Image (tube, rainbow, N blue to C red; front, top):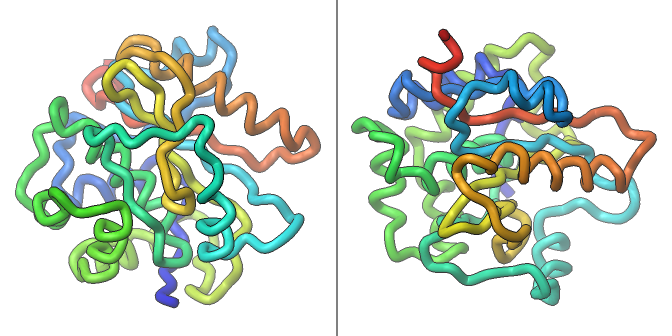
Length: 234
């Protein structure tokens, strides 16, 4: 199976990656320093997506294939809303890029995406299935090359493409009044209940807290947001 260099959970690196792909500089990835109201209030608005990096369970197999099979029966909180863009992860260590793509793809009505590798990818993915979008990413040399270049610009030592990674990115977005969790290793988007553009950050923070409560001894969680850069400058 194809492997990429893992993308560091670094707002500067992830923002540079998005801008190279054609996302306007009005939008950037910012840190969410905490999930309590006073710290959430520091995040610039509007927020279009929240990205969570969390540790995978050390129990059992974390392979993409086994995870996909195990989720087929989880339908209590799933949805088939055709307006939600959701793609399968076929590439090891691509979860950071896929979380960013999920964040942008589900906000194209707000983000004026410029011509570039990402716009070409999303235009080509129209009418494709969950698996079709995932396979298309494997064929997108522009995105994969950009990922490889930017992934080597982080602050930590660059791991090899073959190194086992025990952390995973997921994205939370608002679509049609619902908070969706988008994970390329799960066969369906996960419906986390009602939200709005104004309350997306707070509602996603609630779900992030639930992730943390499952593994209270673990501290390696990172929360990021796709937010307006002009607001950040203010």
